[in-house]
Length: 85
Image 1 (cartoon, rainbow, N blue to C red):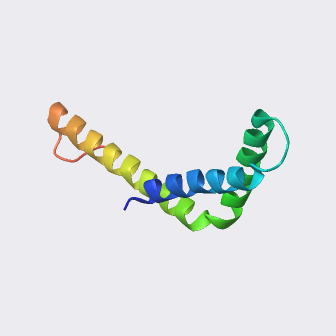
Image 2 (image 1 turned 135 degrees about the horizontal axis):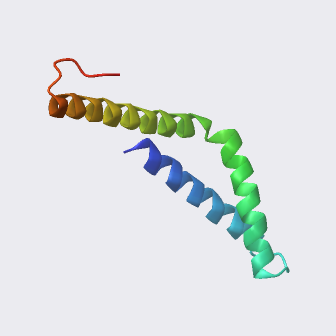
């Protein structure tokens, strides 16, 4: 499973768990959602760092790969033998 999918599902899961814990509290639904969102973001920042770093690395690798492919294509279209960095 992709690190981005793992991280996203974990964030959604944290939000649902915190919201379920707040459900019995007698406050407005919008306030419950806001508290759950802020608390789950803080918890995910602390405990989901590994998956967040993996996701960032996966995105950086994809960007690097696309840049290399773009440089290769440009050099091929220009008739150069070596791609320009």
